[in-house]
Image 1: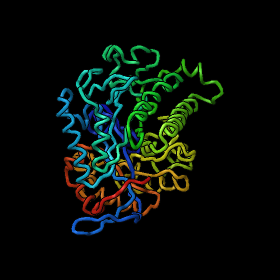
Image 2: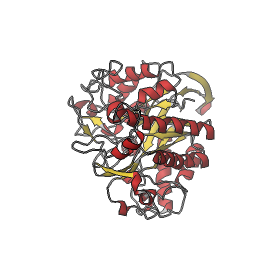
Image 3: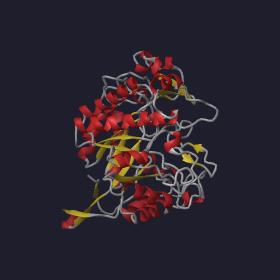
Image 4: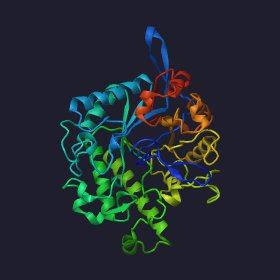
Length: 426
């Protein structure tokens, strides 16, 4: 969030949506499970370290150069060096997964046959950066014992509304009827079957060509609501919405189709590649639906983003869910201590892994509540989450905060909880 938003959070009981500091969109992950003893490996001086199965992830956001590259136009060597420095830092912090944003705005961090090179690399969308960032990231992550989750945003086209600013070969320029402006940005219209087919194929190109460990989506499906604006998909609804009770149900079905069909295609291509989604942390408030959480969030994914995250779990379409629980323990509108058990029960018995996204970026931010000024807040999160047996790991937003660690919150997590190495759940 920031000027350009990615991580929405509830700012009060009225529930206005604010942005995460920065200039982009991003994704989050889960809370630590009760450690499972599996196998031990020799450590220094013959000591054997317990290997725990839990996710310890870190997002690397590329939209608008949020984390990496630090700025557009760096040489290929400089970009590579920055990326490797992040991977090395992840190893130092005893993390085991990097969630790299490889399709930030309908463009690509690999030589895609479907979409242009990402603007964040050279500053010019479509310009060859002179190397293969995704291929390098996979190789270098695996050589360090890290998983590489490729993070895609399905529908965002641009953080502006001027099609002429996109490179001439961009699919959105060749198919302007696919695109809708909303809230100062451009989005592909999820209501068009040809759009869903295209974005699915564009993402699966990376699955087919690279040894990634997971396909990862963030919280952007239909865009976050903007007061006074209408997402103008009326023509598509008229054409394809017959049989649905209302437009909201039709929109949810559009999102369901993208999720279900992507899951099927990923497993058909590479059964070992996982499919995970990192949604906004509230499915529905209990006041809206008795099955919802005891929260008063101003955004509910089911009703506002047309994303039935709980339904995807129950139907077994995804391998993991990593809700962005970017609130402190005791936050009135969306209490971390309320949401962790709710999500734990949501996945129970489904075989879907639960990871919890942690707001490392809030730690030490003077604009945040007092809880976020305490270096122990995130460590308290992990203690709380470990009491819920369905929670199998955490991921931290984002890489820049992992490096700067403004008030030592991650230092505290590592000292308290990450003394031994860990392997991700499988």
